[in-house]
Amino acid sequence: MRGIQLSLSKHQNLRLDRALEQLESLSSKENSDASVTVADDISVNNEDAILKGHGTTEMDGRVVATMCGVVERVNKLVYVRALRARYKPEIGDIIVGRVIEVAPKRWRLEINFSQDAVLMLSSMNLPDGIQRRRTAVDELNMRSVFEENDVLCAEVRGFQHDGCLHLQARSQKYGKLKSGQLLSVPPYLVKKRKQHFHHLDQYGVDLILGCNGFIWVGEHVEVRDDMVDDLSNKSEEQIKSWNTINDEESEETYTPLETRQHICRTANAIRVLSTLGFMITVENTIEVINLSITLNVGIHEMLGAEFYVVVAEKEAERRSLVTKRDDYQDLVA
Image 1 (cartoon, rainbow, N blue to C red):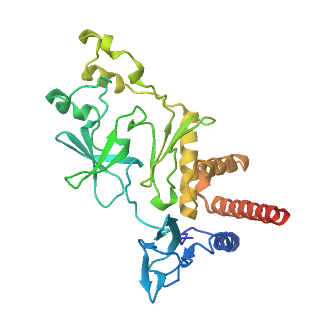
Image 2 (cartoon, rainbow, N blue to C red; image 1 turned 180 degrees about the horizontal axis):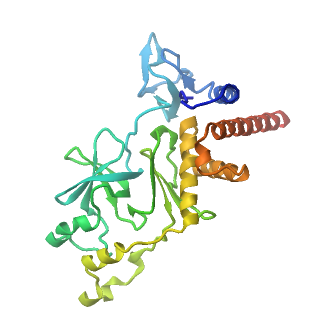
Image 3 (cartoon, one colour; image 1 turned 120 degrees about the horizontal axis):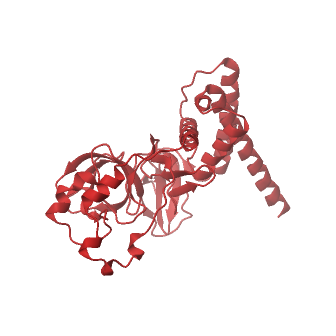
């Protein structure tokens, strides 16, 4: 657990320490075989042709860990995965970024990485939905799509020959994000999963868990796929110009008060999980939201010391019950 800086009373401090100690003891039992520290031996069962990966070295015929983390094995490759590490982009990662520069034929984005990422004009769908070559007019109208400080969602395409990290946004689910909050959490708290786009139907909120540690909580937007339309039958007069589309998008849209409250409550739930060092998943987020509603905790009160302590105690209780149930099932089996 990371050092938590909260204004706690003596009683709250004791309760929080007790809950965190219980969580650490449960975690150490689960990862006792996989967790290693510097200079720990890694068991390879005398296998031949072992490939020593990142975080390992050979010493006197033994495979030794050179960093703290969890031992991972892929076929004959053995490496140590750090529990807390900076974000390292991989092809296919869903990321949330902020535009910091509009350059010729590209947008430059901040994505919580050691270098900025690049989204090329040719790597995204145009507002009219037509698949065509990008022209000089398209380049002149780039600022009508994204401008500085806009928040958008994209997919990592990979490092190109120019050494830059390139993104792509060729699907309707990617693009500009509006009417919400952008949160920044340590990237190691967001696990890579098959699904990073979540719609919390009961709250009317969209949740995007970026692999880079940027999380978006915003009003739900219906995603429509323009590719299903028969664009080949559209004439030049039927295709809207960029200016018309931009004018329509610039109209102020009203977000209901109830939806704004749900956005704030969801964002505060993620802040609580991040401060406590818990993994940020849609399940954990919904659990914290429901807990705050059940206890009749106000949105602003969720960031108070008492709610942090209650969340830690509930998580310790839940993990303890899961461990006891697993032990009972193993005993019966």
